[in-house]
Length: 222
Image (cartoon, rainbow, N blue to C red; front, side, top):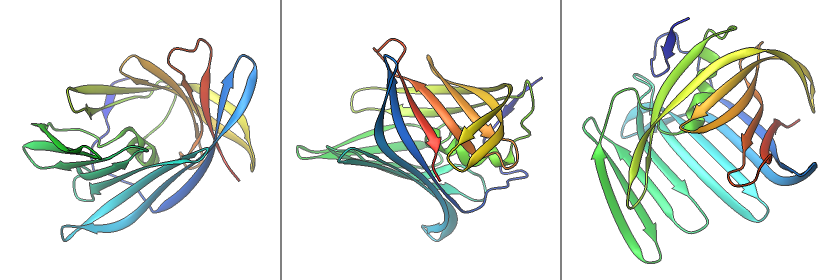
């Protein structure tokens, strides 16, 4: 089966939505609750154009992290992104030719500019709304690229997805028939369970770097 490129507006089934997950850390046979994660897709306007606004927020103990991405409705290309961390604010603006990222902290503002490229997703979270438009089936493969930009270096990273099988899994509001998927982000491999009926992400397992056997799990909340 051929690999599908994900950044295409054709047959888009995107619709406004808001989904909440509970996050837990599994390590050495024990589960520790970390907090909550919310993903909200809504209609918005950016520089006079109709866009999708994807807001991803996480509350881990007393720390709240937020990532807001504006995406063109016409092309599904990223336009603008703002990330709030515990220490600083990172703003990225996309033009036809360049990606300009500003890092704002107590020490000032640093700007980094790199060339733009076609078929990029603004962040990894944008894959989740795209699931609704994908013809998921056993053996289905998809890929996209994203760019990670730091103050001193940057990298273009391929996101590879494949449907590996089917499984019925429990969640707080019921049991669901899901596609099981593997998502490779560079060298990291995540495992996803996507509900068959509407292609909503139900569960996600992500390994914890440096801790053998440990994982962070997101599970759809009630």
